[in-house]
Image (cartoon, rainbow over all chains, first blue to last red; front, top):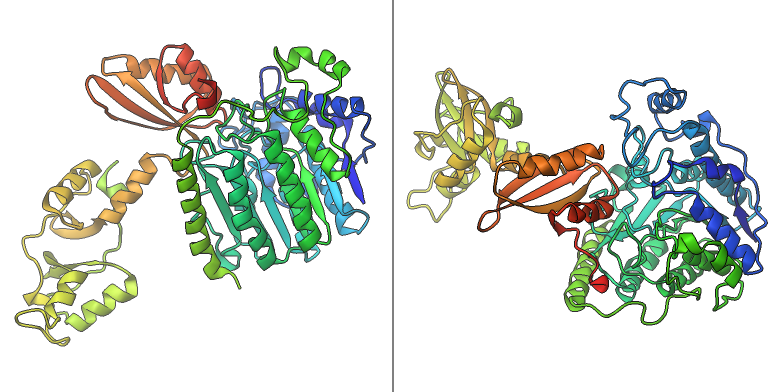
Length: 377
Length: 209
């Protein structure tokens, strides 16, 4: 059975005007689904408690968030990554972030309790948040709290991160855990934030060989992305035998995203979602928990995540976008917004350097497999 | 950055009478390559893993036994560093003499050692790769005030610069590599271009050109 988790309170996670991580993305998406004739009927989760946040975060950090939230000046705000252009302080931020964590955690509990197999949390995906530090728009790590919930029940969890950026927060929180396999595909950290996610980051202690990174060249296109995915992800899951897959489904790897340089299209995402559900059917009896994540092009994000929803629900994928929806969101979508759910094919003019990028990406994958496979089997 | 900040202490030292066998054991057990040799509390030489292997090898014209003293194979007149030397001075000495370590000496006593590995660690630290950051490369005119213009650009936006490296890049240009504490490097690059900076990376998307 498939469920969608959403709560109107998610919209409070708002860093203010001009900040790219805006809740308008969600409103635009839910409106699109309704206009397509599939209004979401969502499960409303409870808000996460302070204790639940503390399963992965330091008390001192949570206390600093709460103090800044109340308008007190907390010592070491900068040290905790708060009050930066990425993570501005806003009133109510502690509660807003706990709503997002509550949703992802509730999804984990639905799956762990056997009530559901496929769950889509329409929010969250705050994969950069570290044990004692906010980073890259992420205050509390909802993914890690949900993963910890599974782990506390003895479950083996595969975490798959298809956001543009490396899932550094989740990786570091479980770096030594042998119950959590992390797989992150992202644009190489040579240039892009957060600068980590190299192939030599393999985990430590009993978690060695269970942290896997596939850093891809800037401007990598969909076919090459899927080739790298196919070369690594299925065999990693096969080896690890997880009981559930947790997916951070950021949509910022799209070619039109203003934050990065991957060149994926809606077709790449559609193919990825299909692959992930197939892998879940093969390895976890279908159990998979999706969250949203990054994604900053207003004309792209609702289309990509609508595809995720339609794939999750086994619904047909319409070709045209509803005219009324396009009219309502015309300002956000910008001039010349395309009227189809999928990008046109081809989606952009061909550009040079494809052979060299392919060579480098294949080399990355082969070096990764050389170094990680010695820890497998 | 000073030598005292990156040097390793305490130092494993031996005496000229230490045997090759013992020197070899220390090198293996501690995973090190360089042993300063101290006699009467004063630095007398250095012996490296290569010196030990060659002196005891069949390829050596007069091979030594494991039980022989290292005195015959050690290198005297050792180049050293002072704890207060800047690390670039230590790097220059090591590079120009093509040597892998400098014992750090204060008042004739060995107080530390730096090797080429410590200099690599320093390079990583200088490059700011240990923080969650994005990377920007900007080409500046090699004239006073340009770097100030660049850093105030970030200051006005409350963006924290975690590391900054500059090096000459052809005629009259300085290449500046910054690691900044933000996820938003692409929008920053666009804003820099609007402010008439030459941004080398991130590049504009090739399919939009």
